[in-house]
Image (cartoon, rainbow, N blue to C red; front, side, top):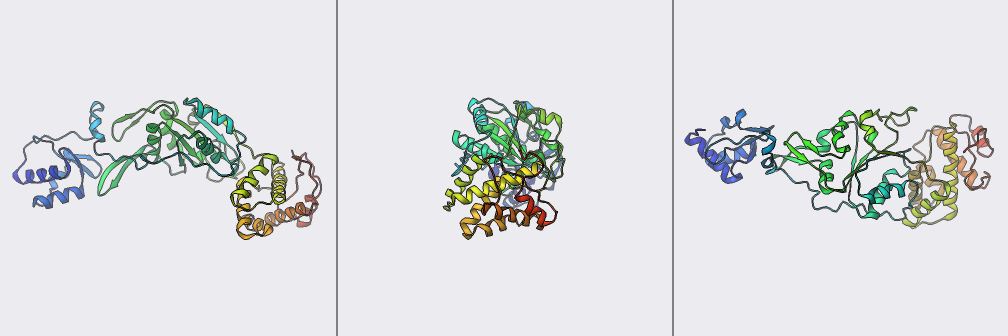
Length: 398
């Protein structure tokens, strides 16, 4: 194409600053115009020079206009010339070992999946705070395998997952998303709280099939390296929360769920295992009290069995036991630690939980190993709650 002397001054200055045929931002254009001593080149804002939103393609040597990024697929390599590499490139993404971690439940199954090196997407579901995410992280810590964790929300979209254009130092450049990062590193992608997502997760369909993925924004095909896999955690099975307990969870597309090879259901640990977990937390926080650990585990187990029987609407998770242990290390007061950590519940539930622990601590609640009795909490009269806390209920509590 013909360039007038003034236009050529601008193009020469821009080429010297940014390279022949480079993609430049409006700020780059202003800088080049100032260097060339010419007015802002509005002619350069025309569609024939536009590469994508907010950026423009300089004419290449000889005066011809280089095709924008949306050119034919076979010429896509130059599209990545000015793309920004992820800042994760040089990071070590192997999870740190968790002091005091106790391997249990589905740990060995997930470990076998990772050891196999096969692409085998798995879906882990279970109530909140029972160690789903930590378990997956610690499998990877043990195997010394990189893991990229992405927390899913209703707002998560294709741009968040696969990547998009970002403004970097005044320039608009493509930044690969965590999915692409995991594929190119051959590591595991963890979609955490997957059931909070929307149908925008369907952008991952080809990824979940073990195929590559086509980046439409830059016309580039990405193929995963060996070792890449996808894991997801959720509080539901992708069918929504029937009891309304997990507000914000969604019904996920059946085609999306079908692409996960297996579903592992994660319960809370049994009392024997959970005591090891609680003692591990106590060792970590340098505040060990075996009697307190035993009482906490019994207390949580009774509450859970009552929850499963439909007697109450709240439950004590393993995570909340860890919170209590940490509070104990800080405040050096058992009841205060429990009180602070159950304050999130409504007053009736909080008081019934505190009174139940008092009964257990005083040895007034008879239990036999893992067969702890359940109690009736909820908004009933507190006297009834306390009475039920020391007596067997109807129902087997199993």
